[in-house]
Amino acid sequence: MTASCIPHGVSVSQAALVIDSGPELNGLLDGVLSRDGWTIDHAADHDEALELAKRDQFDLIITGRKTRGPEDIEFLRKIRGSRPHVRMIILADEWTPGD
Image 1 (spheres, rainbow, N blue to C red):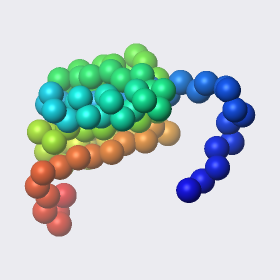
Image 2 (image 1 turned 90 degrees about the vertical axis):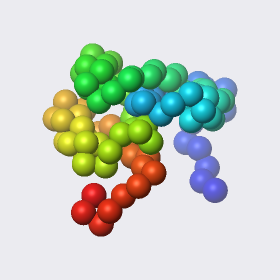
Image 3 (image 1 turned 45 degrees about the vertical axis):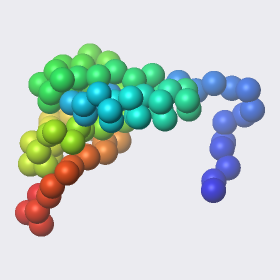
Image 4 (image 1 turned 90 degrees about the horizontal axis):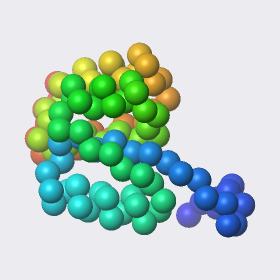
């Protein structure tokens, strides 16, 4: 466990963008992230997510389980062009060593 560098009582707002994860996973992510003070936006696909990420600052982007690994990697490359320090979690039901 790590200690927080944030003084007690100081609120830090972080923003997450969740892409096409379906209602069950969206609910789980919303519950976990919002409990820790995150604001959460949702995008239906990579194109919508890219537009949102160009317009708004996100600290974390989580791809959906319905997206494909190669598409997620290409999306990550595009995001890095405008937001080089954003963290990204790629969720996948299936993968291959080539992914």
